[in-house]
Image (cartoon, rainbow, N blue to C red):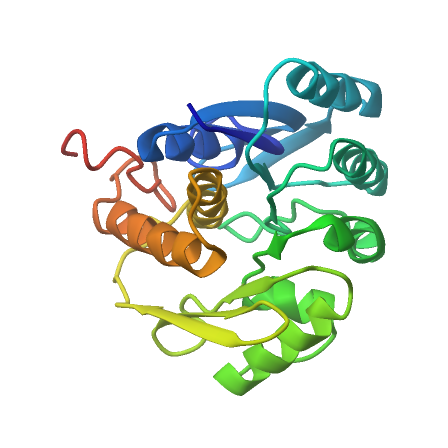
Length: 262
């Protein structure tokens, strides 16, 4: 069985972070594993508190997985501090997994910050260079590239800038920021665009986590980069279409929509 490892924060409400990643990996058909870097007390409406796991325990978790089980793909999510980023990047350089999908999570769906402002420079210098694919949304891509993104052409220019920082490929997620749900993939040679219908719902908690872990899962299963992105986007769109009416804020997507109804 193919495997995928999520290195990310824990969402106690189950819609995002490690919990969303494991659900996604299981639904797609790979064996999901996790390294928890932060414990986030959050729900569909707000983030209450964040406590980072020590860098020693983060490092030990990564060692525990890699020394025992073959890792076919890695998804990296929330990394809140420079120390955490340096530890994760160092370990990924040590073990050199074939596929590393980095989702540079900066904010929760409700707008609460999940990455310290002081950590963005470390993200750029330490984490982006180890990514085989970086998957920022428009606000995250603006922060990383240092430019305003208002059009598809802007998305393409930002992709080029981020490739220049060391990532092998970049997928900028247009979401509801740029027209339709239009994403732009750049692998350093050519651009690909992925468009899906706009779904009118507030229940999108964890969609970024879900997309990046879905891409990692499909890469683990042997899909090409463009093929993995296309299949992951199709999966996420269906998960949003079947989103769950849970909580008082932005409800979660339905990771197991194929297997049972809401």
